[in-house]
Image (cartoon, rainbow, N blue to C red; front, side, top):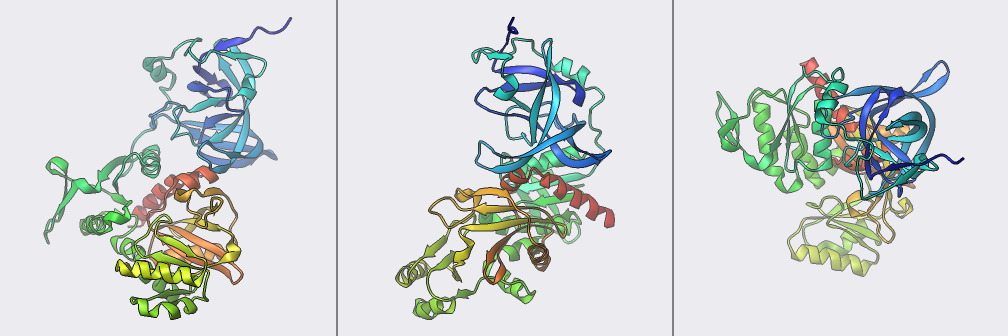
Length: 456
């Protein structure tokens, strides 16, 4: 007699007894092939000659104080393309799942699902032969209340005993900012989002202050993480300098951020420190256009606005005539530009190496969308895991050190002449690189603060 199938709604509560997870809300999605479990601080290890993986989970959505530490047998590693288009390598585990009175074994990938609505996704492979889904219903097998959750997780509350850290930024809803706030809270710190536009300062030799909306004085901070948009670099760096004057540790200094935003000066600084870049020209008169084009090896070439970010203000001129037109158009607007040789053999790919406190903590390869030469994720590029060479790591570390940045996104291009540095970003985004590598980079930034404050 065939097994009677379980009828589930589009959302259900389940548990994972083997992992010590007594209750977690799952999205039941027959459109997804594989199941996925939220996980952070993922680390493979070997136990008695067998591959295992350990990870942490916040099983309750929007609750970072409740933490479960899990271990599971590692059964596979797979490259998965997420709904946002990022390719990431995920670890795969197997565990018993319990829904209602039924228990069976399923496979799940481990991934950070902080940006998703559910900590657990139940895919059709786990449901095959067992489950029917009524998408119009929810919690057909019972609802778990807030009070129930408190009782179930009473011994899993993270204890706060950390630092007071401010995140100086503009948008609390950005993935990077949310992750940094979460990572700090996960490590037991008191996190505060400080909107740059709502801060103002008192300049005083004896008692410098920063005030926040409503006149609140921002004092007693141990550290500040500046995440400053290019459009408000001047004011954001002024606030960062003020925090420095108040003896607050800043993860990137105002001086380092300022010089990183000056593309011409930063390239000169990198060259002075022995970091190779594509041949680059700079001029301030349209009369120099012809020689400027020859200087970088002729067309095709790249024309960049000094103030451009995230691939904006970057143009590929495929012919000399096109290059002259673009350069002269920018000049007519009194815009400052760089002209740079085009590295054809890179084939629309570059590397982003994320440096924290003098170490490369993660690396991805970014590939441009079809018909596009810019590999920036914001321009439709895709990200995948890449293993950088020893030389590429050295370049990234040297570049961050030359710019005096404790946190930097270093962009490198592979050429026939060897690796060349394209740019150093003082507020690199986390979404693409965390999604592709499954690494807790926000946590590495918090660790850097902890380590540097210990040294003081």
